[in-house]
Each structure stands twice: as structure tokens, then as C-alpha cells.
Image (tube, rainbow, N blue to C red):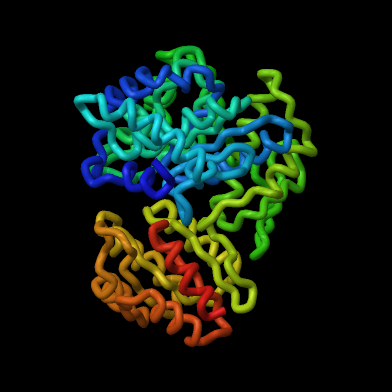
Length: 422
């Protein structure tokens, strides 16, 4: 198969939908010769922050001289972003080659793999072929039954945080969600825990005790002297002073604190990470759609927050960056999200809102979303065409910052529309 045929195969309709479980991925990897067995991995789950965590930690490890693999989801602009080695996306030729190999095996299975299981198997085979020293693996959803959860002894398991999201699959309380995420813990292997309420933390700690996992809980009270602007954040964390990250968002210092604690765990295991490579790794981290600055003049940002915790951080970030000044929003979300709650929260920082329907069958109607903002007293209008929404937003009060916000599925189209007018 060539590249286009490979993508068509991976996205084939017969595998649409989520079917949690490890039976298919285990069988598929076994028939492939278990390429994941050779990998040294840091396995990461969490409701929010896991992608940013993975990006920062991978960058640090790469700048420390390790050959790194990075597996993340979903992709933002290019499918190949899902699997990278040393910061470079898998080539189209390599993707086609490995997908052809995986298909030869998958087609023999009576219970065909899901789309994400195919992607997982391709990613693990890629990292094995490239002889990566260490791989940072982001779970897709949950943890216990996620197809990435096939490693018997990860270097480190990470739960960046627990909050309500994907409740139809993971449970309607933080305790239930924590139980799913704690499913990545493995016997005697260390675990790092980020943001979690008392109930969720108790669930994770009980699982850690059951498996004799050494536990590190991140203490965010150690974040001090925080300074934020539209170029990033600077802060102190415990003994480290003037930590600089280019990622915007009030949530990013916490994500960076998680990373710093992970680095300390790795140092204790004998991994070579100097303070210089740590700083260079953090300062060179690139992570799309997380309060990413797309333009300076006019100032345009994009943030993919789409659940209650993420939206709360988005609001706090806008207030930290712009004080009492309001912003313009172009936003669209999936129908299964708390869109009415988002409207209420965002009303405190929005001067005007331009809603769109993301290019996804699960999207929420833009006109209904606009009405929810209008009901909060914020001028809002729905646009069936994102180009028209972005054009209207840019021309309206050009002195105000413009923020694209909501679904990650909106990012690519927002960026393309923006580039037409800048």
C-alpha cells in the first residue's frame, strides 16, 4: 500500500467507534512478534495535560542525548504527528511500509482491530524499528482498557490529573475515572500523580499500594513567583529557579511541575539529564493548540480546552494575560461536551463570540451554541462557514485579542482560515 491507501485502510469505516478492551491489541501485537516488548516506555494518562507533559518530557530526553519515541493522540494537523522519533514525524514511506505489514496480520483476525488499535500497533512497530532508547506513550482514553496499556514494566507510570471527561466510557465520578486511569499502574513500578481530588487520589493510592508501586505526588504549592505573558511562563519550583516554558496557559506551569518531578524520578534511576538539557528541552518544546500563539499582530491564540477543568484554566489564563480586558472568541465543540457550562464560564471574559460547527459528525450545532452565549448576555452569532466566522471576528474590534477555543478538531480549519486573512 502507498501512503494514501494506508490512511484509507486505517480510517476504514468498519473500525469506527470505540471498543475498549485489550484482547484485540494483545492478539495483534503477538502476531506481529510483540514489538512493544523491546521498548522502554514512560506511560502517561490523565484527563488534562497529558499531551503537554509528553511533549515537554520527550524534548528534555531528546536534548539529553536519548533517541526518543513520542506517541500522542489525537493528531492536530497531520496524521503522522501521532508517532515521532527524535522530534520528527514518521515518514509517509515508513508509515505505508509498516501499515502494510500490520494489515497482513490484522486481516487474519476474526475480531478486527479498531482504528486506534491499528495506530497503536503501527506506532510501537515504528519505535521498535527505529531502536528508540526511550518512548513517551500517551494513552488514548482512560487507561485500564486503553490499547496502549500493554507494557508489563514501564519505566514510569504517570497520571497527570483526574477530572470529569468521557463520562460515558469512564464513569460519572472522579473516583470511577481514577480507577480507569490507575489501570496503567504495574507491579513494583513507580507512579507519578498530578492533580487529583481527595476521592480520586485515594483510589489511585489504594491501587499503588496493592501493586507496591513507589508513589510521587506533585505538590503544586512549590510553584512560586509565577510570571506569565504572551510568550510563556517563568516560575520557581522547589529548588529549581526561573524555570522557563514557552507554552502559554495557566495550566502549563502545573504540567511543567509534573515533568520536573518525573525528571527527578528518572535521575534517581540513573538516567542522564543535566540541568542544561532540562532547560533547553523545556524552552524548545512545541505543542500545538494549547494556547498557541498563531499571530502577534493582530494577537491570535488557539486553545483546545473542551471540558470543565480545561475551560476553567482557559478563563484564568485570559484573565492573567489580559486583566479586565475582554477577548473575542471563535469557538466550536462536540455535542457530548458541557457546552452550556462552557458558555457560562467563558461569558466572564468574552466581549463577543463567533460560533462554528467543527468538521466532525459529533459536533454541536453552531447556532444552538451561539444562543447559549446570547442567553448569558454575550453578543454571539453562529456561522456555517469557518472562513466567514474568522473574517468577521478579525474585522470586529481589531484591537482586541482573538482566541480560537474548543475542540481540537477545529484547530486545523481555524488556522487555514486565519492564514487567508493575515
